[in-house]
Image (spheres, rainbow, N blue to C red):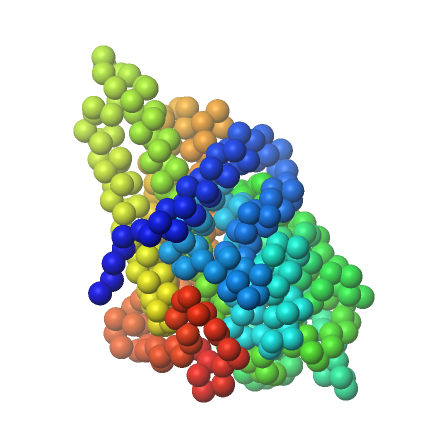
Length: 406
């Protein structure tokens, strides 16, 4: 039986994350966003509070949170600003949880422990200038030379590119094999031939770092390979399942922020002698926001419940991500409409919410991709194999045999 009653621990995480956001993000975010400033010291503070190792087992330096707590953490951070949820998605969801599932014990000790402790910042590099959804067609290459690989290629739209210490990078050892040639590697800042840069002029998430990675003959030791040669596509897809979960949870928080701002304004603004909240079409927008938030939150928690029980959740997470991100865009549009002309100004936060919301219907699988995924499940064209891993709180994810891997 699924029980969505929040535990004391769940509520403690929720309250702690909200207090952090209210003290260290909300007073400054309008200025940071307007100036396009990134403040890594806030990320460091998140590490000190254990956010950067939230669902990682304690034996690897993490907080051992269950996935409902992790969702609440992501929701509260994005309720303040998307840039800070992105850190959770990339550092924890896409990188650290991939290491937990696919890394050897030595690799976990080497990279996962300092990441979970917040001493090192990590990112995930799959997207390329010519490759997004078609992840099996990577142009980046990895050539085996004795006890190391030589990597060449470029990655783009990489969150934390100019700040990360560790990079989970994907390249092909044989492009003719498509997805079966993709291989995963952990790179470290300072490797010869590895350079990064920042992208400017983004529509939203301006308080977050987004950039590119160049690999020009980077020599990567074989012990930096994550999984076996040719397993990189599986590593990437399982990591993206984790990332989608954080994006879905965050989108619920963004929609909640839209509703919070709209409720406040609907009580304060008066037209025709009464609060605008009394007008029926304003009520309609408010009601639709509230409805979509509740649906999104329940979809996220259902996926989290399955994750807590060691059950595959690709379908459930995809649906949560699809609904929550699409709803956050609509909630932001309606919030601006409720604010009228004021919503078009950065004097109010809702224009930032709209700019930030648009990215999430693109990354971690576009809405169009999730439409196809859900249709294929409904039509029976796609089925999930059982996911064989320990449920929370064990979260063993001991290195899975090839036949048990997702």
